[in-house]
Amino acid sequence: MLDQQAAGLKLFGVLELIKKHENEMRQVFTHSGSSIITDDQMIDLLKPIYDDNTQRKEIDINTYKAMCDFVQELHHKECDLAVGDLLKFITGVRKIPALGLPKQIAIYFIHGCDQVKCKCRPKASTCDLHLRLPVHYQTAEDMIAAWMSALKECKGFGHL
Ligand SMILES: [Zn+2]
Image 1 (spheres, rainbow, N blue to C red):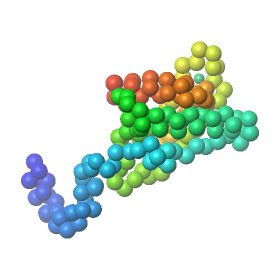
Image 2: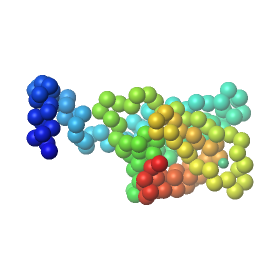
Image 3: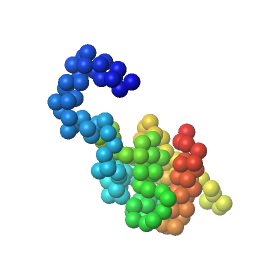
Image 4: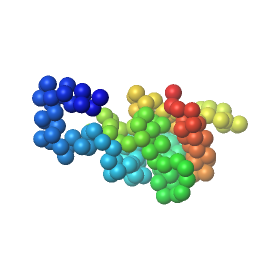
């Protein structure tokens, strides 16, 4: 199978090029340990889109802060979920691709839902790279609880 692939690549002169640029190519073809995403890298990828309305913007900022706390929590605390699981939820992959993501992950803050007995959870669009974050998770605790349930479900049943 691999031989066949190599033969095919040789045909187009690609194999030679790959061998010549072995170091660069290694990053493209293999999962090196260094590509495991850290909390800082994840936060750098996030681009919060705040509301123009001052009052709503303040809520958005609090929600974003709780989100950042959660990412740090994932990275530093011992639990069965990692920052990579969050990345997978949003992008479909657990590691940042060698060539990087095509753009930052936009965070839209969802206002106006009935917060009494609300069970809505963070939602992601893997194709469009955005995250829809309900604003009722303004404390780290609420944010963690919401994400834990969303991520565990995603991990357990596969991402749709
Ligand atoms: Zn809600």
